[in-house]
Length: 370
Ligand SMILES: C[S@@+](CC[C@H](N)C(=O)[O-])C[C@H]1O[C@@H](n2cnc3c(N)ncnc32)[C@H](O)[C@@H]1O
Image (tube, rainbow, N blue to C red; front, side, top):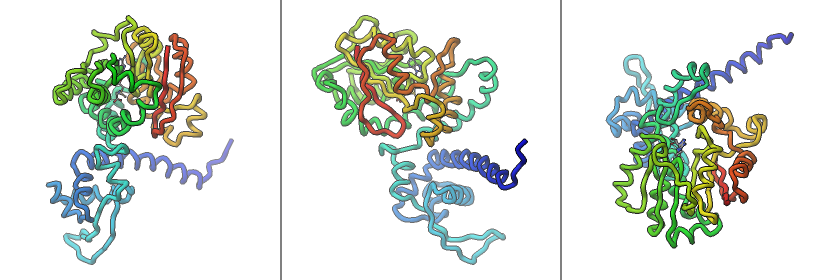
């Protein structure tokens, strides 16, 4: 039997606790976003002491200081160290200052930047809360849909995807599809399935006023959010349907179907592909956007540095959703590789499948036709 190696033991313990460091720092990132600490650092345009940051956010300095130390030590925010000899009550007070680099500003504090990264941290408490339900799911096999993450879960998804979509859908993604912008300009019927809070629907409805858009969802929290945003937008060519009571028509009447990051979350993705086939006109098109994945676990592990994150989120969210009804397919976050998507589309009756040349950190884009 292999002997225990004390050096390897230390290394493995370090590896384990580096994961806990990531989890705890993620909690601090959630607080930085929720409490406006990142936005205050970005707005200051100069390094701030923790007293200045606490003043700007109306928070307690001692708590802001400890948070800042975590964030700077984890390299989430930047710092200039200027230790002094002053002490109060035995605690060293220094005049370290903290600031955000342009890259940190984009990812942490700029809601509209395509690289904005706070969405998944927004819903971190709800995602982690689902750990309580997991032992039962591991025993029964039945997971939990997106509404199990509450209204903040839906807002987190919205904040995750909308910044990139707002910056790229109309300008880069739709023009990459054969002839779609022309059809939408002229006036067409469009369905966005798994539409979440409706950002893509409203964006397209505004850009193509002659076309009619319907978003389909099964999350009540996402539908509520979409309804509010529709009201605010004052658009009259967009609607949202509860897909459970008002599903896609099966009469080949739709010109263009979109699915953004949702097929892998569905309990019955093969049946959904058949429904999309039945909804589309003979010359219609389906834009499938889903998580970039390799064909096997071994390849994902080897080639995707984010594989542990993806498989973990799958258990807590994506696969859980895809197993949330008996007989759920359970594809999960990395379950829809290009090969898998192409063969499932073929089985649903589609004959054309083309991967688009669009650069995205986690998503792949496919043009699919009857
Ligand atoms: C990761 S979210 C993506 C939401 C949205 N497309 C976006 O990009 O922000 C996946 C969504 O798919 C929805 N969903 C899952 N199964 C569905 C189904 N059978 N029909 C419609 N929506 C579904 C979930 O409720 C969830 O809101």
